[in-house]
Image (cartoon, rainbow, N blue to C red; front, side, top):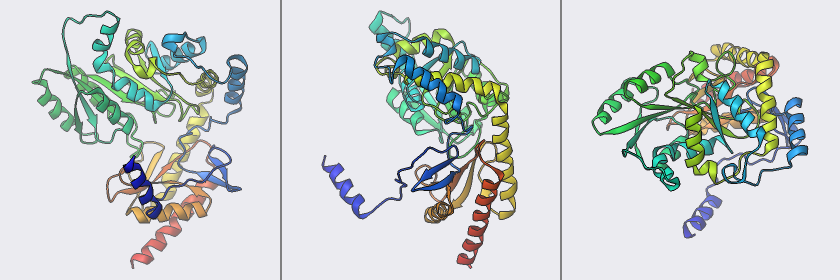
Length: 406
């Protein structure tokens, strides 16, 4: 406990900038804080579904039917039809025969990645006897989400990082590992949350098939966003394979809480049996599962929401173009504006907040040193007036920073 006391004492004299304001509402994309209305340009609620009346009504019906929470492990205490129906729908969205629901996306990555390489050992507890012992090695994009990195570390398997979206580097590592007698597992975000880049899925699938690898894609920021129907990276590229395990979160475009991995039904059964994060904890509350079924209905029935999101993305890029800023990637609704210096980036974020706009200031360790950025995230609920306002503030600050440098 001495370390904790020392760190707490240090923080009292070296405060780290962190927005700890208590808000009166959640961003859709506007929210209330300190009695003022603020527009969020960094919310994960991409399609503005979190407050949609149909989701709220479905959740209320779920509360009336089931109560406020499921106090049982689904593996040990039984199941509810609402969970099975949600898993069926999520599997269908990803062109898989099944999906496994977890309490959050973070727990999905930790629970699946830590256990799939140990599945045979864990199944021995139930009487399974393997004919051959396998060694596994993870190959992970250097910019993968921390939940991926922690899940891999917890697995105890060999792990190698390849340069961001560098397929030549990945193949060189796979070639080198081929002589070690290990079974490879390639892991990548579908959309990288701090970069806004999309993983080159067809090339990843080709390498997975060439080297006999399993490919695990984290579609947290792609589910509901990419593809004609919001199916994610596979639909975006029209690239499907039995080698792909498709993970997604339910707390972003779908507006609720939870995570899942979409796989074939036989693999899903193994995950349910061997993942502690599934078998030794509770699922999301059943009212949230009911709300998510409504969100999936809206994903099909209101494609105009996704269209407005992409229209806003293009409009923001068009308006920002004359200002001289570098947008790290323009592939997705995540549009990180490179600032560089961390203190300057914080000044931008503070000034934007004074103007009634919230934008995340991303710096080390979430971004490389010297590459601090404002992470703009477009939303289906943004109006042109709101986008015009934030661009005007950015234009004014660009002029001010130029004067300071001069």
